[in-house]
Image (cartoon, rainbow, N blue to C red; front, side, top):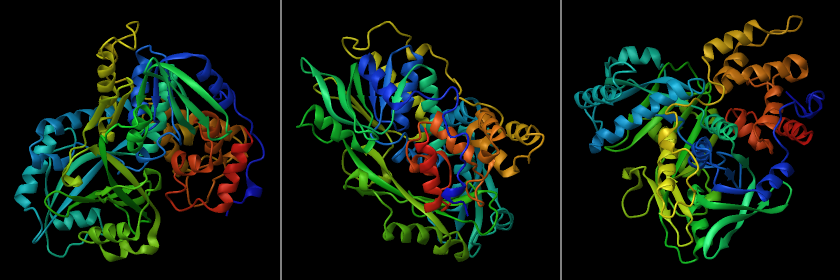
Length: 535
């Protein structure tokens, strides 16, 4: 077991090329006047900041917590076309989603996403028949130009070979289709990095305490650094409220009488140890509209999700006993009991979907992006889905460009002229990166473990070589953080120096997989804290 006493004592000082200090960033934010201040560091705000910075605008991005610290790291980890949308006849939407999914997984971030085969089991007495689902997955694959193969039906026996925990009682057939999977936290962080490389100035753990007004218009924000307690302000020509579940809270800072613009739906997930290898994911229909997922992810099994209206404090959303029971009960439709033993649960998390305000069942609501303009000129945006994060960023930029009076000015590139598939940092073939990491290890020392090489390659791409260099220069940093996880201590130093990590949770939950594996022990947490304080 790793203990605080064995935390690497060497190489704890920030590396060359490290990020500016928080004090330097605060000073930079306070001194300049920005074209656009984005409040909210979820993927929607991050994507907008990225596209705005690419356009040549002076962009600032702040978040009260960590980047992707709320809903954006609590997703189902999928880049998908949305099979269920076919039922409602939203063929164009599915085709657009597939286009974005393929662009991200093949040209923008092939190092951060991977193809995933889905099995859709058809049981006797289930909500859908084999012929209907067979036709559905064929149409779904056709809308993706058959880029993931042709959707088809598979025999129960063959499906059980690939997913040994598949329940085969009363199983009539299995429909097959393809989508993609990712680690949402890593994808978000790489997009933050892309925004910064394009010129954006970013600061996490910086809470908005008030808005700045000039002649009745919102022209910035007052902030408090949650890490130091320092207060400062940012001035901007235009402020974008991209705070997700908190969007109406900020709108009421602009106008205390602002009517609610959104409603919230809670989605809970469970992470479990796997009892056998899974070569495919399961997407099991629960009723006419809902599907429960069982996804092999990060060497674990991800189950979910729930979908129910949420009216509480967004900061207090948690997974309840009712959520856990529902997820396990629904998973039991298609998964054997031994894989659903509660002792296998390593982590549970919940996020909030932002939906347009109005009546109706949240599970049937479209994942639309809601855009409103307040009386002080602040634009508020919320909603959407992970798969289309680039498209949403471009769409918001187009709305900003078209605002009356051109508050952003006119001396910048229109988002329409930007490259359509600009890659995220670290882009590389992850298999080639893993091979290089294994071959190019330090001559006198032990070579990198195969699981560590694969993990680095699929979470950092070519940036893995920077982490490997740190480990080669200081063998202490090459040690595993926990014997049962692939991560090494160099990743903690890298998160501190290059990825805006300020707290143990920033590192353990969003920059590594230790929390979701159930391995974020008190000893390891203390060790990470010690390394972060060494900055």
